[in-house]
Image 1 (cartoon, rainbow, N blue to C red):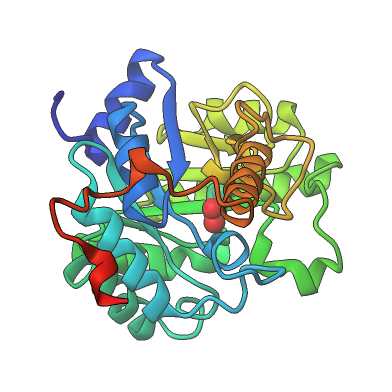
Image 2 (cartoon, rainbow, N blue to C red):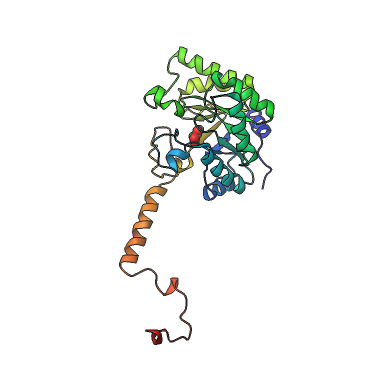
Length: 277
Ligand code: KIV
């Protein structure tokens, strides 16, 4: 196993022009698979709300649920950097509350870093977390937690003016001490400029090919139906369809008395079980 990924590793990767890989995980099975595949960063995303909990946004996720899933993932991961995605309103209220909640992600759940959404507005919180020794990944561009503010999830930063505001957000996060920034759903040219202007790594999702790294929700790229179908997801598998097909076969075999059979049952031994009837 190669050595543990740290925030310093990611900085070095950007300096060397090596692409950073990042995926989500919320449970032991996926965390182990993603880690064993050598993915650099595992995000316990607040996409948990949609993928695991069946909500139609990330907003209902509670801090205690993030802590629960982060603890599972951190326990199973050997190499990747584990980042806990702070849920809606566990940050952005007071700096003290943000520090307390991020502290729980690190101290109790075992995350090596936290992520929170927003740019310049988050600078004070990011600075205080960094001062406390908690590495922070920023998140700019389209912010899923602003769904009610937007009205609908769509590409942000489509004009020079809007793009400049997102660039300034990213620069403010870097100045405040963030170690990396996720750029979500913006035009690729804007992500390219932000990536060139920042000395810290950028991780893109729906932001084109020019970022220092890429992230997707693992269940999306594996082809599960998470209700999150978007243009930027490439499906590397069709596990959702394959899972449904396997479950149907199992149900049919149970109904038809074809499962279990001799190969999936234990031996009766020499006992005459009929004598109990
Ligand atoms: O919650 C999440 O999974 C995310 C990423 C996909 C960036 O924020």
